[in-house]
Length: 316
Image (cartoon, rainbow, N blue to C red; front, side):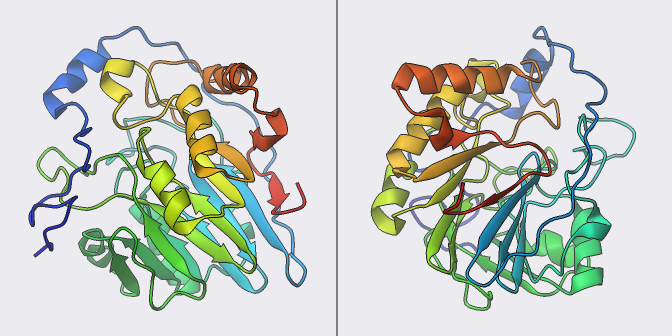
């Protein structure tokens, strides 16, 4: 039983401001829109993650929404997807245009996995099972996702609500609100919660925003959990706006989220790996540059980094 809250009626979850997206029967209209064709493959050279020194915090962009966060001897992986397709089947659905920037076999020992929600481009059970088998990692996820993980044989799972802090994680991890929805199929919509993560990494505070439309929760996160040194913010999969506005930010909205959070720096994610919506593969990056210019935000404050690239938090 889910406890009733401002984002749950006891059976399903919802966004408190009423921005709950389009019904599933509108998906065919989305698929009939004109789509810009992506290249079948963008060649990258995977990199080995660095070995941080004492007191260092290093963030590596593995691709899409997957990040490796290294804090001293603790290594976290967020929304890990190593599958070739973001799909319930291996023969259809959005296919990777870019390989993961860090090979699975090159990952350091992963002590903690953070799972923001159950969509296939964020939650790949095959990857999660491999992590469990190799590293016996702990998993932290919003309410309702534990059943799915346990069905895959994963046992060290902690489910928490928005604003709650994990009790068994090696670092302080707080689940933050996001404006989105959940589903693995046509009949389980919003049975599990979605969210982001505030990670207290030494003296630094990192926010992985999960999957989210733009909403008042960014200001609330800043007020309750700031200051935020680094925010990882989605900028892709935003067209057409009539369908996506509630659940995915466009680059201009991501810039506003960066400003609402008063983040020291932001890194873009959720673009250039899986074609989930009609816009071109490079459009989110171009539109981010335009939005930063229009708002007078220095480009170094909200950056894109290459797949496989690492960033030392506080060092640039």
